[in-house]
Amino acid sequence: MNQHLSPPPVPFIDIAAQRARLGTAIEAAVSRVLAHCQFINGPEVAELEAKLAAFCGARHVIACASGTDALLMVLMAKGVGPGDAVLCPSFTFCATGEVVAMLGATPVFVDVDEATFNMDVVSLKRGIATAKRLSLKPVAVIPVDLFGQSADHDAIAAIAREEGLFVLDDACQAFGASYKGRRLGTFGLATATSFFPAKPLGCFGDGGAIFTDDAAFAEILRSIRVHGQGTDKYDNVRLGLTGRLDTMQAAILIEKLKIFEGEILARHAAAERYTQALADVVTVPRLAEGCDSIWAQYTIRLPGHIDRGQFAAALKAKGVPTAIYYPKSMHQQTAYRNFPVTDNGLPVSEKLSRDVISLPMHAYLDEPTQARVIEAVRAAVST
Ligand SMILES: *Cc1c(COP(=O)(O)O)cnc(C)c1O
Image (tube, protein in one colour):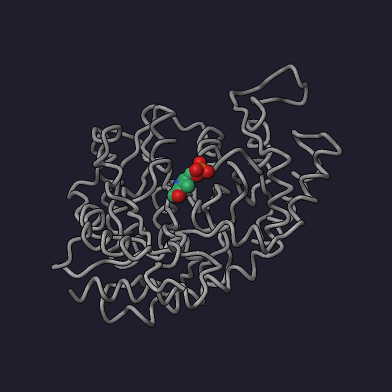
């Protein structure tokens, strides 16, 4: 053996390991769809919706084409538009605020909590006041369960109730996580999730779902999913989208859902090992009281004297990839710079954008591989 040969790079998310574990189940599921040829609205779509509902406890599930469409369709169903303000955290993936702006409404960006990375309820209150001062009508809040950790849903619900807002939970990174013992998908008016391959429950392409307990609202969402169709197929009663989930992706997700509970436990174990091994050298993620995470990302913060770019380069040299979610908060991005932010600014979002970094994280992160990541992190911060 050539002892200078370095081991292969660690995958950031190991989709191939999951693929191997699923074995021929995926091929069989895809073959069934190829045999029945119902590529749109095939039986697997309704089957998946029922299984997702049972999994998280939501009454109604509407599978759709992406997490972004899931968010958009809820806002469309509520008639959100010009003059309306929707409160969003700035430290998030862009789709959270994008769907608001796309409908001509105004995203009003609020700050996040430094320890949990999730919406800061004090900043949310200030943001509502900011919106009113700007003569906008606050209509909704979109808490994000960032990196897989549930937001503080009780505190957000209390403010929403007080202010007459509806809550759309952006759980695109967090399906499988829970809040005070209840799975996400059951908080607020509706919850959106994504099945993008890198999400904790991913398909082999784009996909998403909406969860709601409101039967009438679910019917509107089903109509929007297909161009706003009414009971007469050729009399469309509202504006809609081509927002469906492909049967093929539904068939794949049914197989993946079978192993998801086990994967959740494996993610918890991997996160716990990181926390045990790194808490003394970097700021490790913290779960708030009552909150649980599916660990879509394991995101750390570096001590002040460590340069993030150099840290990432040092890990990369050892075959350990990292990622920065998010180097710019939404209000710092070109397309969103002119939207309002809560009155006293977003100092925490800006600070996090400067110093967070995410480590490899997935359900197949075995101990020897993880030890390599841990060793590389410890070496890089001790120099
Ligand atoms: C991934 C993601 C989305 C969008 O999901 P897509 O399926 O990629 O459209 C929305 N919000 C958050 C927070 C996300 O992480």
